[in-house]
Length: 140
Ligand code: CMP
Image (cartoon, rainbow, N blue to C red):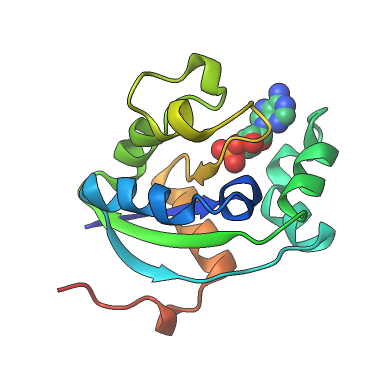
């Protein structure tokens, strides 16, 4: 069974949309393997998004991710990485398909509600960023 990392971002948690977004994720067939509330700071948000360090939006992205609480969630499902990216939709909600989470909840490319790993390899790295092995529970 494949795993992916989702992050309910500060715009999601701050606007009290975490329950609604998580319900959409569960209804789509994903099982929660681990979940926690975290408050990133500039250093930890910068580390998580280090791959985007040279991008013009990096500073804004780091500031946003440190602006309020985040909820990282490890999800499990067949084809979890690709299926989760389909469920959330394009980075820019204006380009996201109808029925996707970003189309419904996100307000811009920067404030886009949720993160999803872009490959199984990166999913492992991102899961390890937030969770220890013993925090990943067995799903029935
Ligand atoms: P995410 O899937 O978390 O991965 C990288 C994030 O960078 C992305 O979602 C957006 O939140 C952010 N991002 C990507 N492109 C832009 C952009 N042009 N302007 C601002 N933020 C962006």
